[in-house]
Amino acid sequence: MVATAATLANTITVTSVAPQSCSFNGGCLLEIPQQGLTGTLLGNPSNVVRVCGQVCKVSTADSTPASTKCYLPPVATTYSIDSFTINKESYLMGVPFSSNS
Image (tube, rainbow, N blue to C red):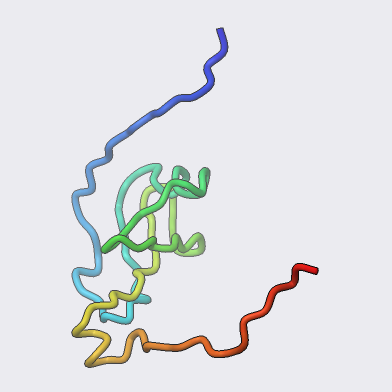
C-alpha cells in the first residue's frame, strides 16, 4: 500500500511573545519561545509564522532551537498609509507589447 498524500497538524501553544509593540513599518524582531519551532519552520518552506496575515521572516542568526525570532512585516492600514507613508500608491506606465512572434 502506497500513501499518496498525508496531512499532519501539530498545534503549539505559545505562552509569550516579545516585543509587545512595534511600529507600523515593521522590522522589529519578534521572539516566540517554543522548542522546535525554528527547525520546523526552516525544514519546510510552506511552514510559516504569520502576523496580521503576512509572513514573519525567520532570522536564522538570532533564532535557537528553543526560541524563534522573526522580523515583523509592515502593517499597511489606511491610518499608516496616510500618516506614515508606509506604502505609496504607484502607477505603471508604458506601451503594452508582446514578445510573441
